[in-house]
Image (cartoon, rainbow, N blue to C red):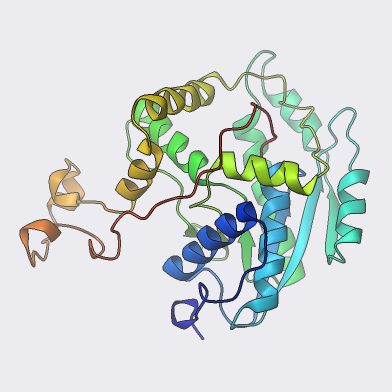
Length: 299
């Protein structure tokens, strides 16, 4: 049974208003992008940050009411960071009666050996972590890997690619790996970071710091985050509008020569070159919680 055929948004909700908002947006992502199907075994990548805790919690609640059956396996990677202590996360998983695995791989030594002092570790660290998670997914028989990236991550990535990489790309909700062996899903892609921060405080998630890169500035991404905040202050709902834009692409109005060489079916002026029906992509109000104090950890 496809999730597109499932009544994801009609199940009764008894959560707090914050949880209701997040469940609504998660359910919309699952339905719109067919993220979960009958019999899926989903690896939930748990970094110990606010987003991965929220992802596991919300997917667990969804599993209790979903019209299809699926199972979750939480996977946390101990990368050998100095001062690392994963006990709070493991205790939380035990209290949640979660099926989980703790992987131990010393990527810290690899990263610090390969990256010059003063340079950011994030890119290499991410690639190493991805490879380990792909291997673990195979060993555990997982059909999909769920990551905790949210709306603001996607928009910041869009701006980073636009300003510094010369390409139009953000973060897809559903991604098949280059070798077609793995499927990555991002169920929180419609969720606002501000709402997730409020939820993390409400739930009291035991956040684990990233001692490897927590002190590194990630200057460009921080600049994009600050830019979005300034724009939102001047133009309310600009993040919502940007999110709608990356789901309403008009290739015929861009300069990609490969796309220009392909014939486009034009059914109306409004739909010229559009990848998806504009009706389906009509902007919907995203419920943002009041902006909390700065803080929180990455996924």
